[in-house]
Structures are given as C-alpha cells and as structure tokens.
Length: 193
Image (cartoon, rainbow, N blue to C red; front, side, top):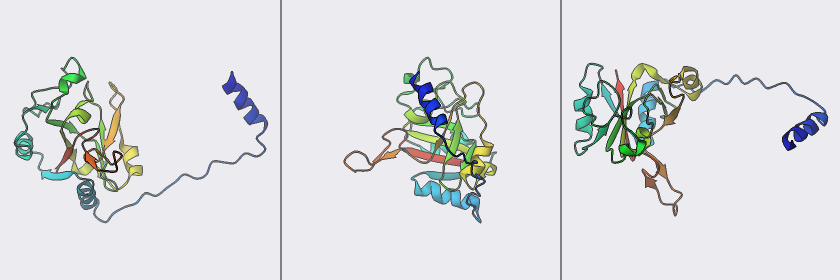
C-alpha cells in the first residue's frame, strides 16, 4: 500500500511534465575496428589468436594451454573437452576446469567486451574455469556498445548472457590488483577469419 500511496502523491504533485529527450546517440567508430578490438583486448589483459575457420581449433587451444589437463565445453567441434556443461549433474562438477571454451556472439572494439550468450546448461563454465577461451567470428566485431546491443540474440532455452572483457580483476583488497578473483584469470579470444 505504501508504494501506491507514494505514486499517488507523486502524480498529484507533478506540476509540469516534460517529453523524453531524444536518445539517438552516435557511438564511437574506428578506422580499423578489428585492430581496435585487438588493442583493447590486450589492454584489459586478454590475448587474441587469429585462426581460419578450417584450422584445427582443438590443436590450437591445446598449444595455447599446454599445461592444462581439464577442458570443458559443449561445442560439438571441441573434442578435447572432457567435461560438458550440458551433461554435468551440478555446476560444482565443473570445479577444477583448467580451460573453459565457449562461443562469443558479438565483440566490441571500444572496450573489448564480448557478448557470451548462455547456450549451455551450466553457465558456471564461463566463471569457474581457470582460463577461458572465447571463439568469435571476425565478422561479428563492431565498433561500439550501441551496435552490439542491436545484434544481441538470446538463447530461448536459458535467456541469459553476459559481456566478458579479459580476465577477472579486482583491486578492492588492500588496493592490490588480484587477477582471477571472481572468474577466469586468463582469457584468450580466438578470432575466426
């Protein structure tokens, strides 16, 4: 009842109403969108590896992480994955994953964010893995967030996604930088050309 009472008082005491402002905002653009994306990814602590769509991504990922023992992915073409976030009983079963491998939908040059829609039962693979590999088609890299939001498509099954930009970092603890505090401590973006 308090909420309705508050809203009634607000309406009764509103003297003047204003039209909504024009929200047409032109986002930043770059002469070389891809080069900007690579620069920003490296600036936030990530790594970009280029690959052709015909390359053996399993071998490429194995070479990027030669010490890794446990890979997790639900992507049908990733055969090195011993754990599948679609078939685990509980997200906790993904604990101990060295490398999680997912697909990104849209990459953003202005801040190196990549939209990763949840296309797997347990989205924990994006956050619990020590390192994360995001596979992204070069054609899906845009200049700015305005463009990215127009391209985002949610998976009907899970209706969740997140922007990921480089490895997890925080400096809240005694103002000392900690990498991997809340999610992956390393992120590699494989850009398919």
